[in-house]
Image 1: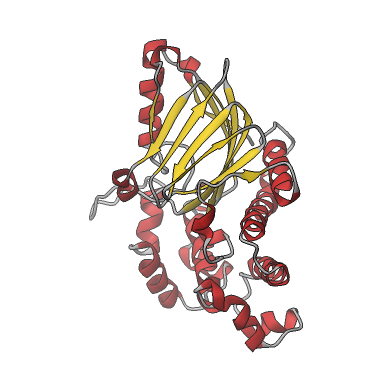
Image 2: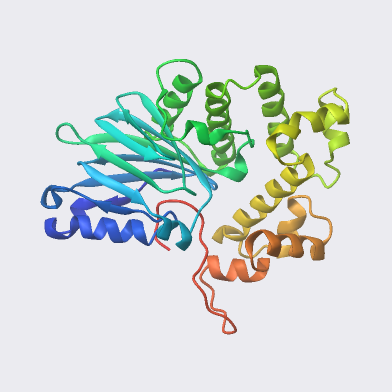
Length: 333
């Protein structure tokens, strides 16, 4: 399932940096790329797309990757990203902080804020692994911004587990389409664990939240999923359940709805499901009433589900024209 999304060797040497910059600026996660030595630029990027989580392994010469306020206004995929240095160094700057990440160091950054990520090859090439995770798939923990551009170890604890997963999952293996949901959950859970660990979050609360999050994701198709049924499944009271979510700044019901909407959005953008009616897509993620679903989808994403599907799948719509929204990842629109 790993696929090459860019290879500089496919372009003339004098065009390689220009082509990669154009590729990145026009992607669903737009950034600009520069180099102090553009004539010697080379880069190969391979991606494992897990529908809401993108894992990338990059082998590159020294380059500077910048996300500006203008690019954020153009499109924000709403992702929390982790980068792992396997060879070479990374100089990561965001939220008023700058850190240098050496081998087996992890760095966290957010697509909604400007950042500068400089890759330093220290030789022939640097090797990095990125995990871009949609924030909607993560447990909302307060004060996550404290960890942006802060050095996090990938040699011990949860960081080591995440590093091992990133390396193993981006090495060619026997993954199939049926493995995608499990790999996506593992990636999200490990990033959640990394954030909770470095925020010194209450471990009992974090463990409970993680268990509840996993339970909710596996039962989103159940229209009867509710705080009462979730509390019963975890042998706690409804009031205790609400208290667990209170510090996150979002109610449990709102978080469940956001999870369901995100799953429908992913399905509507999946070409393999283009024959499935919108009503069925909504129903498979627990929306009982089509009108309620349509209103909620429009409120969340700015357009009705039918038009979202047309735009993402590239189907013509004669009545309106606008830039197509796309799934976060490394490919072009």
